[in-house]
Amino acid sequence: MIVSLEIMSITQKICYPMKFKAKAIIIFTLFFSLITNAQIESISLPKGNVEIKVNHFSPIISIYVDSTNSVYLEKELIKVYDISKELLYIRYKMPFEAQMTIKIFLYVDNNADYSTVDEIKTQLASAYYERVYYKTNSIEDKDILKGMSWTNHQSFFHLNKPEKVLTKKEHESQKRLNDSINEEFADIPAPPAPPSNWFFDSQHIIYSDSQNAIDEALEDKIYTCVTLTNEGYKSGNDILTFDKKEKVEHLFSYNDIVFVKFSQDLKYENYFKAVSQYKELDNNRKGFFFELSHEITAIHKKSNIKLCN
Image (tube, rainbow, N blue to C red; front, side):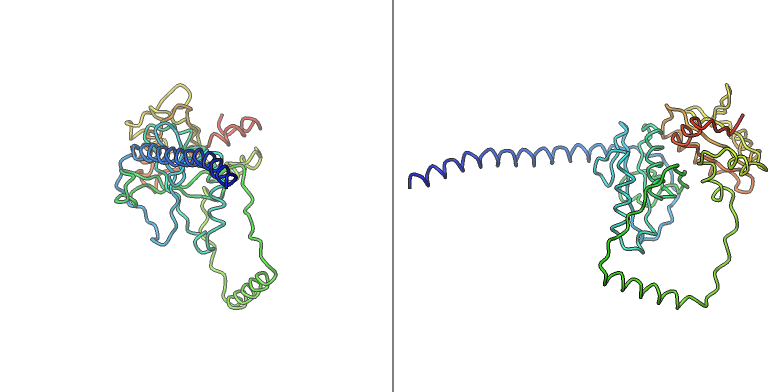
């Protein structure tokens, strides 16, 4: 009986600190969650009333960037360099039909550094996400379909897509399904190839470290290089400010391609302003707004790649 009481006493001494620790962890988690939600809710988005055209059955993955450049994946704090692997795994766990229609929504604070957004986009590109949707107005659900669709830039590096490990029976079932599909569509002629688009055909070439391939892709094009700053487009010592709309229009109408690099201190609101202004230009007259990410700019520098003199 005495032994039992001693054991109970020892157990209580152990349990009380464990209970205290558990409560402390819960309190800390709730406190951290409240801080995270407050930071996300404080995000101030650019204004815009263009509606995003999205199939309502498409999975949506949301990434948030607050004014301090903290990044959240579905409201969970994440390191930028973990985004590609995390998204690749999310896609891997989805049914095949859903994998093809995932949409990436970016909720970025106006005062966030564009360099953070640039790295997020590179992470997305390395995980094979070729389009992003910049959200506007409010992070609330009532504005879920307000924003701007934009083609993502490339990445020099790509992650290998993980393959599901199947049992022998699953392999056989998958093979039967594939054979059945191939037989069903064997006599159907292939659709005609879509019309060629220089941007989509050549983007991966520009994002290479082959000077000869880049020169070949550009041999019949008129192009220039500029750096996007908080004031406008910088070329040499000259800056073309955003308010010079006619000159901005001339920049893109005269050139087939405008290669755009980004200043280190560029704020997201000014990046968004530049892209919005570009999208408003006459489609029949404007050249390509070709983004050169910090990643590819560094690689080109190491490889002595010359785009513009």
